[in-house]
Length: 198
Image (tube, rainbow, N blue to C red; front, side, top):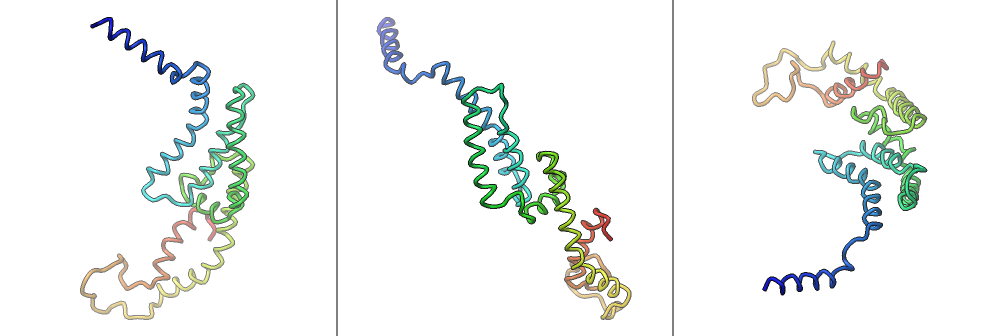
């Protein structure tokens, strides 16, 4: 009985020998895993976000671009795979103008985790930060009227501040009912003061 089992096992091994990986195939798979590890890490990061936003796009592409830089000490297969991936990156970066899109740059710049563009090359970091700051400064002029309006409203509210308190839930912690401009401005003002523009 024991001999029959051993014989059957050997026959099975011979029958499925073509399914066993050769040492060169194992090496190639290990190289592929190393190249694709960054993709896996980024996928995990994006999947673990409570709400994924466009602020992840530029950091993800710059991280992947950096991971696909070719090292001359790498094996030919890794170099070829990285070249192929870079070809696809180039297509999407160019098609969607990822590194020139001011909205994507601003989204990353306003996210505290990516604001310094640490995954980018030095020259690219400087350009991204300058574009983000410029975009905020250019659009701050739109808020100057709101600044003046809110200062005027605080000093001379157009309604009776001493009126009876409203029944029900009070939505804000202010002593009088705020208009929508004031509420939105308070949020924007916190971000603007970080850039010492005013």
